[in-house]
Image (tube, rainbow, N blue to C red; front, side, top):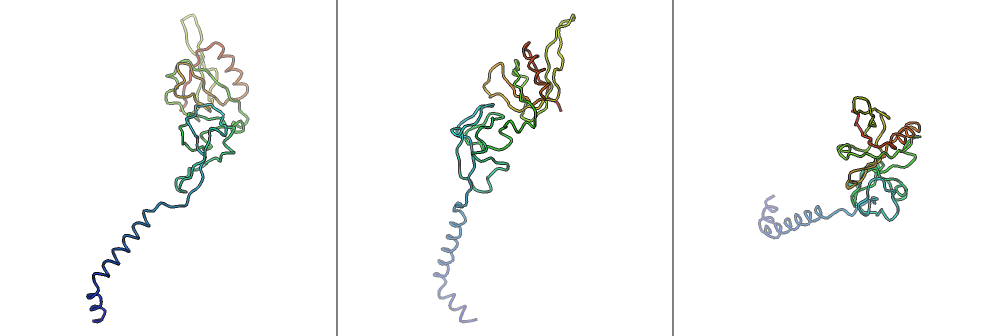
Amino acid sequence: MERLRAFVFDHRRPLAAACAALAVLTAVDALRPSTDTTSVAVVAHDVPSGRVLTADDLTTVQVPPAARPDHLLDREAAVGRRVAGPMRAGEAVTDRRVISPRDLDGATLSMVRVDDPATLIGLRVGDRVDVLAPVTTDDGGGARAVVQGATVAVLPPGDAGAASAVGLSTSADDALVLADAAAAGGLRLIIRS
């Protein structure tokens, strides 16, 4: 034991330098980015709501596996799907961000023009809404529910202006009722809780 102590004492500076070098190498290795990545399909540029994605709208990026979102669609599966809400460049394409006709489960996609943009505040894809149409009475005016419990499938882009079209998933019969009510205009939406 005495010999080991004497050896360490005699060589303390080279041993300290070796320990410092080992600590630096360990820190550099820990800070080095991982080379393990996975491919993720993202939109190549800002995409408005309702647009049908083409191959030109998509690109692939490499991300660490931990950053890969759940329910991700690959490029081939995303092409031909309609964007449910506006997407920013670089946003990953997941099953909730796009819809296809088979996602409607036998329902009909009805595009409804809403004249009052305030009606759309807080509205999200997947919300259930009632559609109201104006009625004229002897007392003045009012509103009646023409369709109840429709599901919001497509939202207008953020810069749609005063009148905006909202895509609603409804039954075929309700789609006809909506088309008839839309001819008169003035439709409003009420979000159901």
